[in-house]
Length: 178
Image (spheres, helix red, strand yellow):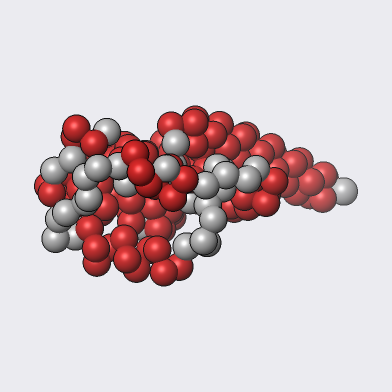
């Protein structure tokens, strides 16, 4: 991806990378105002993404390409937003990243925007969500396989959230019938 490097792209992708911290709250806020069931599904799916990602973080050792293969990178990042954003994120990061970390944060949160509260927010957020996925590889934090792991984790988290909510509904009906 080094042939793509430019200050403008680095600024945009650094912003997208940071936004994985914001996406769940924004989308949850949109759903909270429109559909309580979808709001609950989103929050539960985010919780499951975090749990699955944290388990993966413990059991699948690995280190990002920027740390594992620094000699392969001949270009350095430039851009007005790059250092302010990435330096703050790097201060809070675990020293050795593992593969599904991206599933827990970046990709899981971004993929959960598949639950938009209307088409306009979806299309507004979509470039930033896709940018978030690209940024994890572009900024040398994760491999492409991490993108796939993140999407698989998200699919599993959404399925588990739906399953848990169906069980909750059945239990509530059984209580009301008795």
